[in-house]
Image (cartoon, rainbow, N blue to C red; front, top):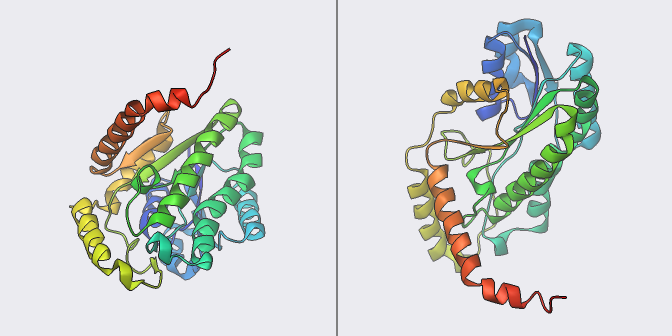
Length: 276
């Protein structure tokens, strides 16, 4: 059965690749972008199975309107993809209030608005699959992108709660956690805080660490088949990595956390106080 997708941030990167994957196999896609001219070639190729929608996910009213337009056009929503977002670079001390609010407005609230707009439709039809694009930075954290990490941790937190809340309605949630890919996440789409010279030496060190972590970046094209397998799965995972690097990072990180928690367990138990 052909599905209908709603994809934010479809002008480039994962959003565009997944829109193409869905369209090529006969599905319909409502694709949002701040500038829909970037979708003109897909419109010419796939015709009325593509609905381009101009959207800034920071605007809650616009999000609800776009979701309604997509549902009105196609009659249902099967796959809702929260892909819109960007990377805010800067040491924690360097991040301005406007930059912090902007990062959360797009990466967290934008995804929240899309979910809230889509859920009445998904509940009414008794089915649907919400894909939340997080990052390996949504379960770990790295220097010089602390506020980005914070936004993805927030996305992961509400998405895990969401999955439990909507399961009885037949709605599935999957958090996709990519590693390093050859997209423009760290390039044209990235934003950079004003640099504090006090961090110059560490900034250079952090850049080398990031370069080493990135290693051999993944090919976004290879994620097309992966995302189709996810939406076709009878029992999709709550969380899934994209790329061959994240599992190693997660393993080291969680083993370290568990070891530290266990080492400090006597203090934790003492902090509980008297037991009745």
